Image 1 (cartoon, one colour):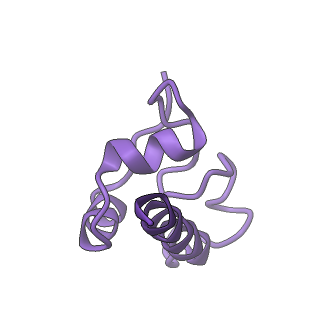
Image 2 (cartoon, rainbow, N blue to C red):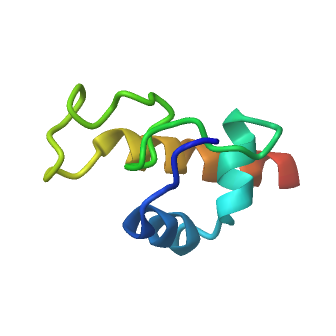
Length: 75
């Protein structure tokens, strides 16, 4: 079983106009999240890219890319 996304990340995904399922399927078509709780697709992000009490900057880029892909698909 994969790691669960934390509620702050889920809210950021929704605020960007995406669904959690769409965000997860972008990387893992089977719909199971295997990234880190911070929303990064790297399962070792917390403690490697940033400390536990810091915001993940990776997820901001990943969400932006997902939105861009979704908009491109609609065009």
